[in-house]
Length: 432
Image (cartoon, rainbow, N blue to C red; front, side, top):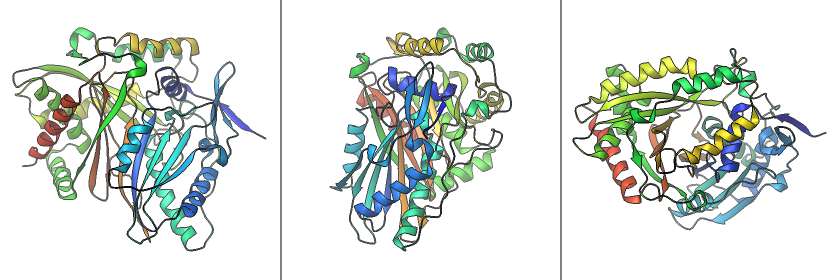
């Protein structure tokens, strides 16, 4: 008997973004894995994860509403295994994967292994493409933690001991204080910033939706610098997340020019798994996050980084309870219109500010017997052209992995490269 359930508000919104806006919001991520690996062992491990996670067996169909249909067999999912050509092969594969969309009516994910061989120190990259309605960054990194555990277990000839999950309700049904649709729309309107209060970031060059490309710049902050940043934040009474978010804004001001003053919203990702009743475990694959907006006016060359960070931290803490509740019921036609209006409202410039998603250091084991998780980079498709720059960050084994995401040609490659270098300069110079 096929299991199914309707998509909640957040899942529907994520699905519509991808379906209507050329993949906007779709996740493409890469992990680097070290250890002995064969194609046969990899496929066996991925099959075990497919059996464990219900939304890996799902597709999205529509009657009156969109719903998950859990009838996708393991053989239906595209799994490719390629010989690893060089250390940059994964970036070329990421670039290619960012140009196509997972067909939600058939399956919600695909995966590619760049296999480096069976040596003990062999390096491999895995590129996963995922519909955002079925996963968030937290659950994806924990899924790769499961993969290390399963590979180690199978290599020893033992049976996989991870139980299969049941399909859980959407986040809106698990939050203690759900909103009505009208209350949600009122909160959404109240949190929006009037356009004349925002610095306008004009498109470098506009392009039709289907001709926009999501691009990314990948950077790693070494363990010693990361350690010093964490220590500095503790001494200053702030958080690494607040520091990263503030550097994102200060880099934009510097990019505008030394004498410039900017005013900008900042969009942050909030993990809702600990706010649900009951709480949703981190390794259950699903969409259990929300976006929280804060507003930062009059940022200039005189703005102190740590004062900006402390102001952001206070605003974020105040905004989370107000902005993270979602409606249990919603008007699908109105939501579809809202998604369609996103591109219309950003026809000449980026209509939102900057965005930072920092997962911090997840509670996972990056080393398991013969295997080690060495790196993780995640790209969120940005074909809609909302943000001048989006930053995704995760800390693994003390190192910080940063993915800077932009939309080309709306933003030029030269501007993006200059922005990333300014960001890293400001971040590293913040250490006293």
